[in-house]
Image (cartoon, rainbow, N blue to C red; front, side, top):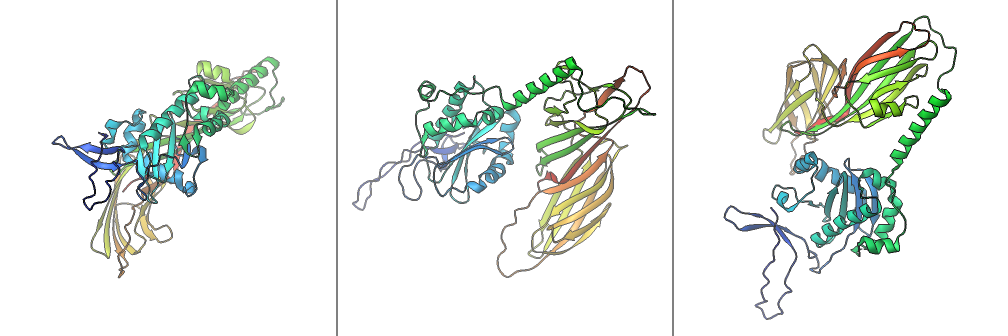
Length: 489
């Protein structure tokens, strides 16, 4: 739990003037005996000792660490690496897992769990962040500024933007109102110093109205209007009349790519599936196809041939298809994902010239299925010379270009566990080696006839006025490329 307090200032016993009392906030943790153990202080410049309360740079970022809006107020800010620092220290940190899972904002009670929304960077800059909905407001300052004033300003800035945007504030609102937000920043921050954020005063100076019907909603509405026009006029620009086939066939492929980040203890820190619905149609005439999915997908985009009005109402994908192969739609899923692999890695240094590595990989999918072209990359220190292996399956080698042990398994069955044990020889150096950062272990694989989101086609129906027979096929597949599927060591 974080607490606020003051340091006692004592007069200079050498006869000089007493120092000015430092009234800046002190953050600390309660001890078991009821005392307070100081953790850090923000409020006085550590180099000059002068009071300072300014923001050097302000960023709006989404949950992936992408910069939506940025405004620089001071020179000397390392603006090129802000997004990288934010992803490393906030999004990918174990401490932020609770906040992101439960969608809550940081507060004083959570600071005792190592979740204080203040990060001190290696170059001396301080990163202060405030989460509202799915957007992070990130303030950077080079001086040891008044943190509570900055957090108060960030929260008031969110309320100010909400007052212009019908009470809404999320990523799409920020993207759709970036011009308005830049104008508000010009009036509320003067050379990095916060000014008035009262909505009544701001609206007397800035008359522009916010757009809460965002660009995404506009595109969706335009697509629905296009679909309605096609229904009324009967015009289908993507399919010509007179198409004939001796054998009428429909193929649906559900292709997924999974990304994940897991802790060394096996906890899932982040998971994400991006999928595609790929169709091949060889049908006579002007058929209508209906596809029913077994799971609701909200974050999806479709080919212009899809009747969006019907999809929104009934969750049925109804369309007159183009001839041949085409991409019917894309989707993204972040919940209900069954990750196919878990791994643990144990690295033990045996003096300065040797390291023992043990890696266990276990599959969690059906025993009747399998994963192919599996490659596990196990990072090793840059001074590695060679490695010797003991494997339960597959082949392994040390790749100096990748700086990793490369373990290849041609076929990995379901509900199985395989082990790699390696003795890594290190080059001995006279000087002290820099600490190794231990990058995460990564897996790449291909899984035919299965996916991890659970999305599948419950039915495929084809209607055409001539009433011919149609052969229908559906299949699934999933893959993860190098760097998508990571496990910390």
